[in-house]
Image 1 (cartoon, rainbow, N blue to C red):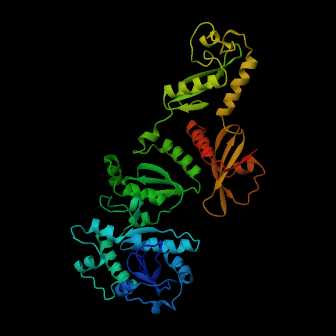
Image 2 (cartoon, rainbow, N blue to C red):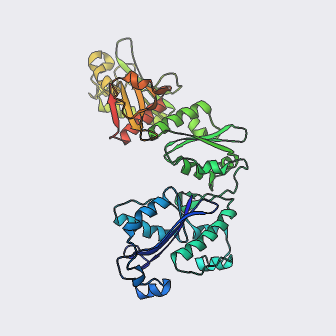
Image 3 (cartoon, rainbow, N blue to C red):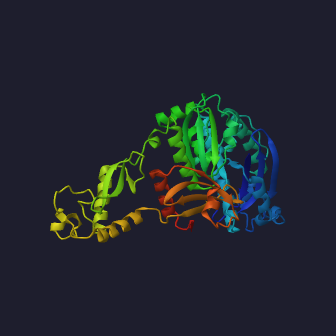
Length: 455
C-alpha cells in the first residue's frame, strides 16, 4: 500500500515553518481506495508571498483544525504504507517535524517521485512536478494546492508503476526496487508480503535448489537488497537465479543468527560458500599429561571436539595463548608454545614457577589453568537466555545445559521458568559447535541487559 502525499506550508524550512494544508491518498498499487484532505491551522502567520503562491490565506485557516487535531487520522491512513511524494524529503520532513513537536515518532518508508522519474523516465531537462506532468499530459487545475498536486503525483506514480512492472518498493540508501534482471518465475506479490522482522530467509532457483540462506532484522528489506540492483558479478548472477523466496520469523536476532548458521551447515547453499566453510580454522584444546598437569595445544578444528576457543589463523591463536600464559602466569612449555626438552626459557627468567620441571605442584598450577578455562567457557554451566518472541504473547529461549548449547525455541510469555526441563521441552535441538558458542558469547557481550536465567 502507498500513500501519495502533498502538503502546503508557511515556508520552505520545517525547523521554523508549519503545515497549512495536507492531502493524503491511499493507493493499493492499482487505484485510490481512501483519502484525507484538510486545511491546517499552522498557528503562525502565513507570509504574503506564500499566499500569492498557494492561494491559502490566514483567514482560510483561522477555523481549520490544528495539526494535533488531525494527527490521529494521518497516522491511521499512513500506517503500514509507503510514503510517496514529489520531493519526498520536503513533505516527509515537515510531517515528521510536526509529530516530533507532539512527542510522537512518525516513521514511514519513503519513495520520491522526482528520483524515481529520473531513473525510470530519463532524458528530460526538468523533473519539477509542473514540467514532468506537462510532458506526460497530466493536467493539474489546482497547482500549489495539496489536493491538486497530490492527484497529479498519483497519475505520475501510476506511470512509474507501469514502467517498473507494477511494483515499486523502497530500499536502503533512498533507492528503489527494480524488476530488471529478475527471474520470470519470481512472484513479486510474495516478495511484497515478506515481513519486516527478525528471521532467516531462503532463496531458491527454478529447480528448487537452495541458492542462498541469510538472516536479517528486516527480512523484507534484506531480500529486496539481494533482488535490487547489486553491483558485484556474483550478486548479479544470484539475483538472476532466484525464482522463489521463503522465510522463518524468529523474533530474536540471536535465534536468527543461530538458525542461519545451522541451516547453512546443513543445506550448503550454492552462494554461501564463505559461510559454509569453517571461518575458525584453529582451536584451543586442553588435556592432562601423565603427571597430572593441565596442558594446552592449538590444532585444526575438525568438528569432532568443541574447542575452548576458536581462531581464524594459527598466528591469532598463538598470540592469544601467549597473552593468556602471561596473564595467568602459566608455563609456555606446558601450553605448547615452547618445545624445549628441559625447563622452559621463562623458568630461567623467573617468570615461570617451574611446573615444567615439577617444581610447582600440578594442583597449584592447574588451579590457574582452570580459572582461564572458566573464563573461556559460557558464563554459567546451566542457563537459559530469554529474548523477544515472534509476537507479544511469547518469548524466545536459548538453552545451554552442562556447558553445552542445546538449541532454541519459543515459550508463552507467562512461563514461570521453574525448571530447565520445562523450558527444554519447547526447543528444537541443535548440535553444540564452536560457531554456536561464538554467536552466543558475542551476543551476550553485545547485549549485557539481556535476561539470563541460571539453573
